Length: 165
Image (cartoon, rainbow, N blue to C red; front, side, top):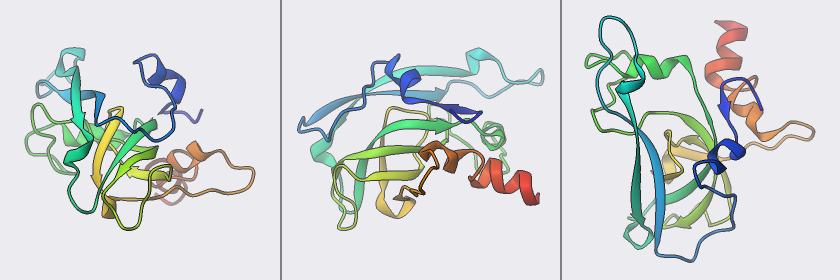
């Protein structure tokens, strides 16, 4: 896996398997949330909490999709969202930590994305992401290039920034 990514194997350790689109109406989500703002000594493990959440698939609104997240990228920009006055917008206390990632649509109320579609975008540090279809895109596939490369060496926050600044 690319440096700074969390693979499907790591997510499987949280009880998330790579499965086909779900026909269940309620699914379990595991999500990393901001429990406390970092202090003047920096970020501490106690600033974060892993929480279970039940997601009602039938409650999707028009234009929303539910994505089973397979890979997330842990990027430096996340730190800039942890303070109350944050450069990239503040993550609220109890809010899911932001993370770019890859996944598969498991339920859809979108005219453009269907269950089974591979997607990329801001999915957050969680196993299931409920997102507006405008916030994600179909995943880029290039011959000979692993999908996670779009989060690392070919991605915006690591690859492009490292190359051009």
